[in-house]
Image 1 (cartoon, rainbow, N blue to C red):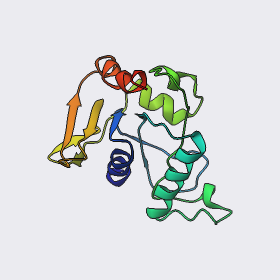
Image 2: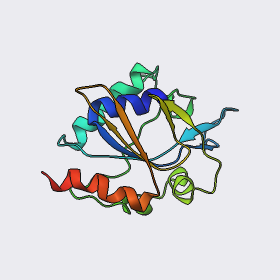
Image 3: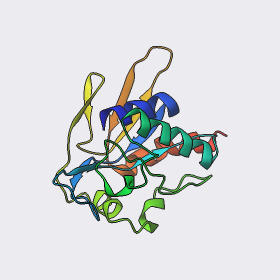
Amino acid sequence: MQRVINTLLEKYERIQLYPVIVTKPEALMTSNDFLNTLVIIHSNLSHDQIKSQLNELEESLGRDRSDPLRSHKDRTADVDIIACSETYDPNIFSRCKEVYVGQVLLSDQPSVSLPLGDSFVGDRAAAIHLDRTTGQIRIVHDELDGLDDWLKTGFETE
């Protein structure tokens, strides 16, 4: 999960991260739990370009996209696009029917804290910004409502 978050920061500079929670896999025979979260990014890339980048990320973490049974096997990373929008909509996830999305949104599950830079993320909502000039990572922990304005500005400056 740490490599996924780091890669998203490198590609998109600022992300809004929801709490990272432990979930049980669905329709998959495994004794391993999953780490799930939701991330909002802003990008000028098309849906297909973003999907291609996410597929490359999964492959760099060991996912074999050529395996016809890949959807039924354990994987090191599974990064999905839940929704795309040209405007910022913090409620966009509420329309998704995936069980893990609802679990993250309810935040009634224990969260996981992950190291990032000199701090930790995942235990609560956070706005994260990578300064590409200095390489410094700035993390603002807040309630999700307080983070909306922070990310929304990226959509409105287009």
